[in-house]
Image 1 (spheres, protein in one colour):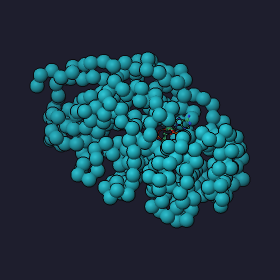
Image 2 (cartoon, rainbow, N blue to C red):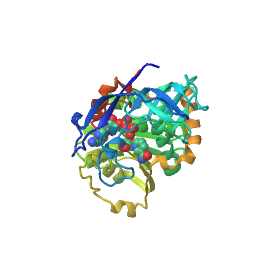
Image 3 (spheres, rainbow, N blue to C red):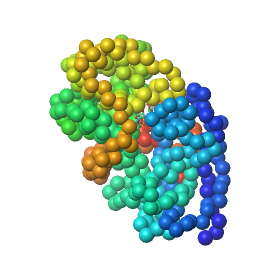
Image 4 (cartoon, helix red, strand yellow):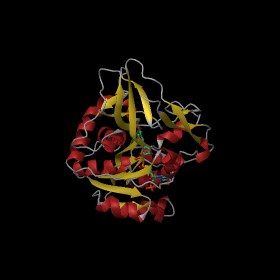
Amino acid sequence: MAETINRQILLVSRPEGEPSAANFKLVETPLPALREGQVLVRNHYLSLDPYMRGRMSEGKSYAEPQPLNQVMIGGTVGEVVDSRSEQFRPGDKVVGMGGWQEYAVVDAGQRGLLRKVDTTHVPLSAYLGAVGMPGVTAWYGLVRIIDPQAGQTIVVSSASGAVGGAVGQLAKARGCRAIGIAGGEEKCRYVQEELGFDACIDYKQHKDAAALAAALRAAAPDGIHGHFENVGGQVLDAVLSEIKPHGRIAVCGMISGYNGEPIPMKNPQLILTQRLKLQGFIVGEHMQDWPEALKELGSLVAAGKLKYRESVADGLAQAPEAFLGLLKGRNFGKQLVKLV
Ligand code: NDP
């Protein structure tokens, strides 16, 4: 095969506060020849996810920091184009952690690095969203932590996003009332009209936690049984003031603090007085639940019963800007970068 150039994006400096395009660098590297047991994957879509912001910093977190001057870590879907492994053949569609680059050389023998997927009924890109890590995140927090019962009211923040959109629809499928919180009228309309939530509150229309709490009270006059937190800060304060005794909160994300802003909790005593269960989780630590979650998510997507939306940036060079947009809410649904 003639020498193929791989375009890659490296993290070259660590952001202080908000990241910028200057933290990244696009480079061109020749692809190495495959060794025995390796496969070459042409990445079709790259997934951009909020957790990447945490990895860009050196501070203590649940995951190792992304090393400088190396290809940014990231989930990808693509097609095997060359293989020196018995497990994969050219043409196989796969999901893996290919990173911010056009091609990935993967050791096929290493368990869990690359998984074949069936695109007969589920589009390839959905394996990075509703039928992938974000979908399983929604499923785990809702089913395993909130444990919703029919008739209960469930609230989710970042409701139009990859995780939030799935949370509300999975709650509806279990006979619950679903209330979303999202930024902007267009996102809220989509959450209600397309995703079928019972209500959606535009947090940008409410100047503080008290005003947001009043809007929640109007949408859920009998209180909130379960909450799926993706944002933190004011949003969490508002929900806490409206949650019922013995309410359950799955703490999935705190995006309002990812650039290092302090996000103090106003009334932590409510955890005690309302006897709440508040549990943080990292989806990658619950691999035993993935098969059950993916089975439900895959069937719902194939049947058209789990809807999702994608924001697709075109070409690897757009990845940094698209990532910066994700941290500002410029994405509308799952943020992807199309590479082919
Ligand atoms: P989304 O598709 O929801 O995109 C991020 C959204 O966050 C934006 O569109 C924006 O929505 C909202 N947002 C951004 N900045 C702020 C801010 N300062 N204040 C309030 N909202 C903000 O992303 P995902 O669905 O991929 O992820 C959702 C959450 O789930 C994130 O917090 C992420 O870290 C977390 N997560 C956790 C996992 C785990 O294992 N615990 C695994 C995967 C995701 P809007 O315009 O509505 O404000």
